[in-house]
Amino acid sequence: LVLADKKKIIVILVPLYNESRTITQLYSELCKVVNNLSNYEFKFLFVDDGSRDDSVRLIEQLKLQDHRVQLVELSRNFGKEIALTAGIDHVEQSIDAVMIMDADLQHPPELIPDFIKHWEQGYQIVASKRLSTEKIPLLKRFGSFAFYRFLNAVSDFKMEPGTTDFRLLDHVVVEELKKFREKHRIFRGLVDWLGFKKCFLEFKAPERFGGGAASYSYKKLIQLGVHGITSFSLFPLKVAGYLGVIISSMTVLLMIYMALTQYVWNVEVYTPLAYFMVMNTFLIGLVLSCLGIIALYIGHTYIEVIDRPLFSVKRVLK
Ligand code: UDP
Ligand code: MG
Image (cartoon, rainbow, N blue to C red):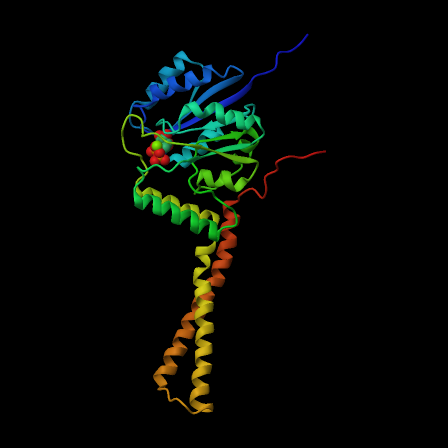
């Protein structure tokens, strides 16, 4: 008796927030792509991030016709990063890979076979880079440039600029991701932090399907940037300390110079106020240094509190 090879199962994970305009279109495009990949079994896992429109009802309807459709409905809007997390947490252990994509068709479903091909070649994370589109406002582009530059300078792992959440993750990576319990998170950052064998595909993002504005406002992007930096680097916490050390050492040198020129070489005369000013600045430096020392401890506490897994194992050979 020969058992037929079990088909690999791929979950297509789509977080969505008020996407009723695109769901039907997205579903039909996904079906088209998936029908040509008969060697795999697919599931469509939609995470509704507290939509206030018809999204949930539409997915319920799809589920009636298609048993592959699954829905995780969040109680309110938590933001995309958390919606993605909820999706990952609900992926069963038996699946082989998760394909993450946006609902607005900016992540072209036609590319899914490409992702799968690279995955089959052994890449555990197939990430993607969005080719620069002229549509992105200058300010956003600059902001993103500055964010990646700064983050890569102050943290000890690399986050590639221009990458998106349009990614395929092997089930090993998915299981590792489930271990992250930190609350302020940039999903992509966590995936990058994990390492694993990774490659990038490039794609051009079309306009948002069905109109509507991208839901990330400048305010949200700034928040995301701040979270990204604070969750992967303690540098901002240490700034006061560095400043303090610089100020105190400069003022000590200055004080020595003043004393030498006035009392040893007798070439200069300073008022008592000048000495007082320098002394005062020295004390400010001292206070900042002490803040820096406190920050070191806070930093340790912070690291412990976010309780990130210590390591992620790629393979064990026994
Ligand atoms: N999204 C979400 N929760 C939110 C905002 C967005 O789940 O609070 C989903 C949205 O439905 C879409 C994806 O995240 O599937 C990307 O959102 P959007 O297109 O607004 O962002 P952008 O394309 O600018 O990254
Ligand atoms: Mg979009």
